[in-house]
Image (cartoon, rainbow, N blue to C red):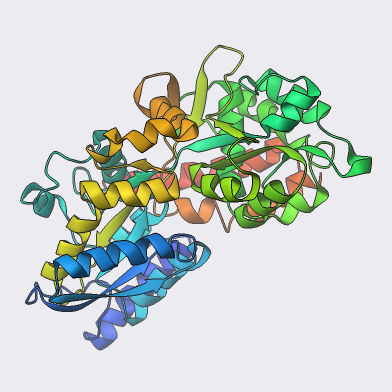
Length: 444
């Protein structure tokens, strides 16, 4: 366990302690820290998809390919809605029923690692066909997010860069340039808005997942490139406060009022079916836009360039596959992970999702350059044109601070009930405390 016994009662720590108590009381069951076995390499394994629904079709295809190549292994596929995945893992860690393999994003990796539920995978990678075939930046992100130095607790499969989607047809009709700078972004948000006719320049994320988007807009405009100044966060730097004030000032003036409750699903659906000029999401919604609009009415670019001439973005979670320690057939489970992260499967999955492959061979495939948004995003992450502010995914408290603890506060901010300074000061206080606790445990 790496969660302090002096925990301040936040949810991640509470679940970790519950898991420990369950172990002490029962010393049995398929709990999170059970050592499991290597197994025979045959039989059935269970795989939890951490974005069940949108990715079910492509995973079904990859599983079919795997079972054809490995007829002695059957994969039980369980789709988990992305909004429920962390709570599902926490519940299974505490009470039993973990899968053999599960999709694990860096945003909640530290929470699962702190509960001793995942098997380290670096030694398996070194002995497999994946050795030297994983994008170094994604490997580094996974290691950093795990919070245990060079230990690696998932195999990266994709990165999903933040993207500003915009309606090229609406921009052209209004005589607007692409929103390549923040000045052009705000100009377009204003000019494309006609509230009387239900037309808006932008849609802002006010529901689940709002914090990361708000931070992206803040750092993108302020030009600050480090999340920490020593052990003190820069989240509430005056430049970020001013940037956030300007950003949330768009609410109801250039955005629909319904945005205060919109998560990404509602936000994307609203943009795809309406007359809204711009949407901040990520590459994952590319196929949704193509289906709704065709490929000639929209385009996607990374964050706009700031006044200082630099593009700044906050890091996006790297998705991956984790091998759970309690698995009774780790040999078969690893075969599935290795297959899914291989050139052919990783390329197939990421092309379907519109994401950036973690397999270095897949990252060279022609479909990436054929998809302009993906090509631009891949370039932004690799060619030095973008400064990335690394979010502290390694903090076990990060997911709670950035979601349950402060998403309701962001809604208050949109509604004018609190100030941008108060909002960011609250987040900063919680982050500084979490960082201090993490360091006191001998990390960093």
